[in-house]
Image 1 (cartoon, rainbow, N blue to C red):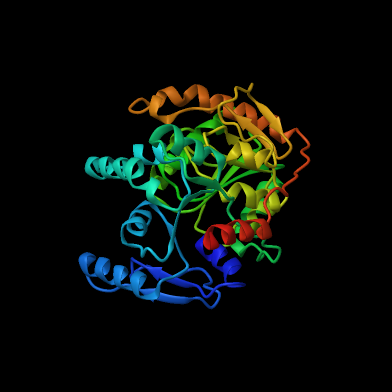
Image 2: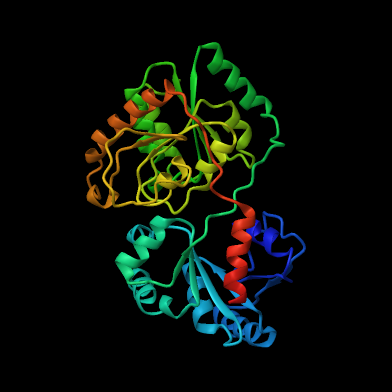
Length: 363
């Protein structure tokens, strides 16, 4: 997301990317921006960051992630505008934080520090609503993520192409899911939902993560080994999206799941749980933004189907409670597979995103 934003901003501004974690590889294009890696231990990095911000007197400092947002608010110079960004529903994100002390610190900071930022950019209306209702944060703007349409998608590699041909040879229909494979991303729930779909429905999982082994064990023990296919990490997922019949997500929470937008740009409709931020806006082409309004599931929209809403916090410690949600999600997959969608996705504009950020940067 930072890379895509830099691509827009370098049209008008000299951009410096400051990396607090100097060990991480830069995987995305920096578009000619200056890259500054902080060095030394944590305390030294704090001092260096403060010195840089006060010496350079940037027009604005835009931060990504709660720790960097806190540092931006505390250390930024009075000469620079402080713009922080939020990419997930924080009350849900904070719930799965394993460190109780960090959870308390993050909650306190959002309640007492966030109001001191010049602006908080939320990448969906659901995030802004969550910050206001849970933490009393009001100084928010909703600016959607920049979405890039990868029209030059690479062809599938040999192994993936052979898998695709094998599924199609069996008259199979392909459901895709891509991303970090963790409990909160809901891939295991999605695998369980496959029990309630026809035998020719195949689920292809792209990604890596700690839940892979659990998923593989489950598919073997429940007779799903020939219908659930774990492919692993693929950098360019748009090639698989274009070959799939549906994209499916049972994430427990999100902010603005870019992968749903990418699927629609690839021409593949989406089935997603009606979580508290993101899917309503994406599947409705920006028309349905009220996350408090009650709807009847399955809810068919121009870009796909919304399946039942659930709050994973209600199911903590009792995974069997997910069974009803998983069964109904399987029913939604069947409905979507037999529905023709309009696939309208034009409510996000790179030019509008640029202009919105320009207004924030220049006050």
